[in-house]
Length: 554
Image (tube, rainbow, N blue to C red; front, side):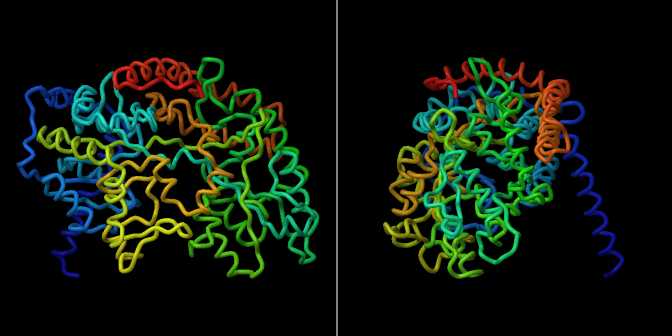
């Protein structure tokens, strides 16, 4: 390498490091907020803004994550441009570097006209530093009434993801598939080998199966090398979630109980669940290595025959034999004769099935503070047109039926040649995941429409084992919507994980639960709950503005 080239690289690296320092100061919310003047100067008299449909508008567009291998000029992009008389400049960023690259763009003033963000805390940081255009509710209601109605019906909590200090700062998106709870999978051959004739449903049946899987040599290899379950500790949302839900508890989320929002993990019932799990651990039916786990270790323990139960799947990635990458097919390759069967979460103490779900709330599309307001109205018309017509929304997710995909009752929606695999990634053609976002149509389809596109097996699995109404959902959608969450939420969850795992493993006495509750409140939890109950009042005000029919407390 020549000396001049080396110097150029040093210069680039220095600028990148400066950008990352700016990321820490700006998007993490540290230091003083940026100048308020820029945000205030962006106030627009929307009554004087109009959109001439005959005028071609150029729009730079950063869509949701997951399309890093997309390419400009795809069929879907051309279709959007044709329908709405726009010239799109799509921006694709790898998820691994998304935050860093986007931060450098913002610091340099290179802000896309339309951009996506997944977390309320980052959304607010961009607002505070003057990068985001305010979008009044009145403008949304006037120019995108069908889309507003869709958000209201599917996931009204999402309105609060783009709310800040009494104003709206973007377009909420909807992911109806998030309302579907995860599915449980069991080793059917193990159940048969230990004399269990039905898939477990009640907590007692779960416990019995776990004991037999641990002590009765379910794989018939003559070794004591199996356990009932191996939970994941890689993310708080996975930690024994189905067993807390059995008692109507969202252990790491906000819940409304008797008219007040509280934290599920500090409820007295959570201590009872911890006592049960502590007994199970002492009994030896929980894999003791679970504390060392990563995101996939629970699945790997199931795949490799260490446990006979897996509770973190969906039908397609676990039990759909027509899907080559499904867990059932991978396991059959390892050991022919393996049989899997789906099951519901443990039956709740109230006689109904429950399981934690993320909910239908998606993320947020926002506009650059420097965007031409006419482009905003064009984008709103795009969204309104797309989500008033489910067929069009499907086309802009999956492409055209008969060209890019087709449907059969056996397989559901399947991508056609030559658009599979790498070609599909470049064209941004989906693979049947139409409940989630696509690049230019950032919300999924309603579940009743999705159901008509599922295979018979998919439809039956959802009906029997993961119905949306079983889902327990955070009362505010995401705890991150609260201002104090940026100060304390991560620490609060880490404190809770430490106490809960230590109590379950017998490293702490069960009586330390009260110590945990006091510590949780002292470290910011009490402030968080006070803010949550006040925020609920603000949520109800926003819902009145956009026409949400208030749901009953969850």
